[in-house]
Amino acid sequence: MFIIKLIFKNAFRHKLRTFLTILGMTIAILAFGLLRTVVDAWYAGVAASSASRLVTRNAISLVFSLPISYKEKIRQVEGVKLVSAGSWFGGIYIDEKNFFANFAVEPKPYLELYPELRLSPEHYQAFVRDRKSAIAGKKLIDKYGWKIGDIITLKGTIFPGNWDFVLRGVYKGRDKGTDETMFLFHWDYLNETMKKTVPRRADQTGFFMTGIRHPELASEVSVAIDKLFKNSLAETLTETEKAFQLGFISMTEAIITAIQLVSFVIIIIIMAVVANTMAMTTRERMGEYAVLKSMGFGGRHIAGLIFGESLVITSIGCALGIIAVFPVADIFSTALSTYFPIFNITKVTIYMDIGASIVVGVVAASFPTYRSVRIRIADGLRRIG
Image (cartoon, rainbow, N blue to C red):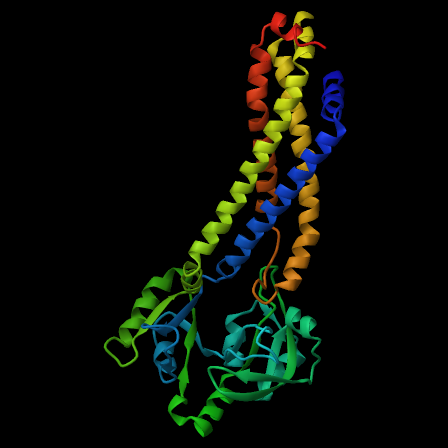
């Protein structure tokens, strides 16, 4: 108990230095936790992917469409339970800065494929009945202040013109990692409009979402689907939803790697700062350590004092950093909800923060401890005064 009290007294003997070191540690842990959460948010779509869903797209690129007639052929493949056509719409709400994901889908099969999108029975029925209707996630509705029955107008980019939709429902995520920022409307409405305005683009879809009976059939069913359309004018590429999401992430792999590197560089920098603090502290107390040695205290006692002081400083900074990361993450999530619809601080991130603080505390105290333990009593006593 005496040693613990001594450690705390030593840690706050030079209050300004300790305060600045704790502040630096707090900022470092805050930045580290925030950057790790950004990386997690980038992979959120992968984490939320289902092993029972496949995505079929044009083998050349996602920008090329597929004939809607493929749907029935895919449905007949053994192991397939459900198929839904879908297209990325790419509409703009009022201004280009108001970006959010908007898709044309087939309501019944699509919502059956995504049970994590929770819709009340009333909203579901209203959405299914009205071809000009749309549903949106809770976060999206809260952001723009929409209400059920509002007319939402999107300016088409891929599909030119102004498109009016009636908001008939709001969905909530079943899980914490469910995206609540999507805007979904009827694929039939899009297709019927294309028949009137641009007939050559009618009866085409961007992708097919396929539900399979058992996850272990994913590889077999994917091969069977692609084999159906081999050597056709629009060959397909079928992959699991997870692989499809990872394909998008691979396009920004350099950015993710850079963020990860920066997060570790921050820890290295604060490690140098804490090491400098501990070096200054032990240099000032070398005489005290020599007196302790002369009284019979061994190297392990001195090491305990130095390591304990270092860990006290880094632990306080870590605790404050973890506490601060939650409100900062909320602000960040609100401001960039369009780009990071799922922005949650995970337990793994918290554990990494704690682990980083322990590593910083131990490494920063290692060299000062070595010097203090190795110094002779006579040399240490010369430093008194």
